[in-house]
Image (cartoon, rainbow, N blue to C red; front, side, top):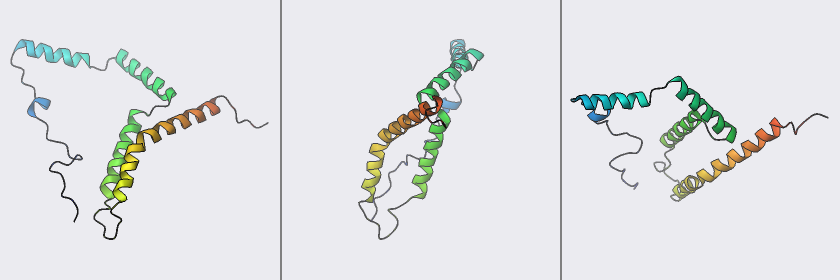
Length: 132
């Protein structure tokens, strides 16, 4: 018999509280504080240039872009949703431990992939592979 699911699934997000999307601004101080917080995060030209510079530094270093990270998370979620091995009869009950091994080694695998990609990028940028 498969174990019962937890009361709150990690794929579901809890409903937002009213404070998250509808702040109560009764006093002028709260209004001023809210306006300052919005101005602080407003995407002006300087902040966009800083973000682009940071993105190029991260890309040169071999880090994943925000889009790649988001897409990997989505793909992992889809794989998790469509791959239900516990419900299939005749499966090895210890197969879930192989998934645990993958989870534990995932960060080191990603780090090694980044290093290999950096090496390939270095080889290509310095023209080590040339037709003589």
